[in-house]
Length: 225
Image 1: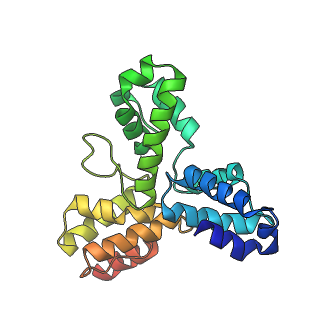
Image 2: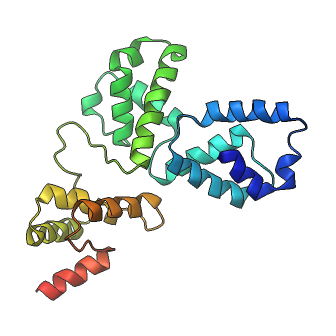
């Protein structure tokens, strides 16, 4: 499917990249191995970025860099950065303010002891595998939380936090459901995860009228008053 998109986008430039059918077959296998860990959604996003940034079909290394940029658009640290953070705070993981919950969970799945004691050549592949797996879940819309975190952290805007709590009370759902459900309001509108999270809320509670933005939530509160 990926190569079909490349052919549609780059036309003769794509065809000229491979002199024989054997070269094409080898390239397909190598690409399949390289992108196997990634979710279809992030691959589609990377493909759109490739269209905008490359006049020729990107190399595997260039495409993986685009995937990493897509992950960063979701607030996910680069894998190397996440690994460095996990190793640095593996001795007291419960006391560190993690840059993202996915870094904590990847470290936990890899093993804090392993991150402290194993050589990089051994611990990095394990961490990288877990991190990619968890990033795919986040990109698919799953919200990861820290241990003991009953709800999402209080947002920087206390007004928004209070509005969401009030909205949840009138809708007959718990404060935790309201804060978690309306988490998408904290994300930038250009963040593709925002629309996905909102859609999930609408599917879970189809009888509720979920606000599209903060202004709409403020207007609701004003009308209620």
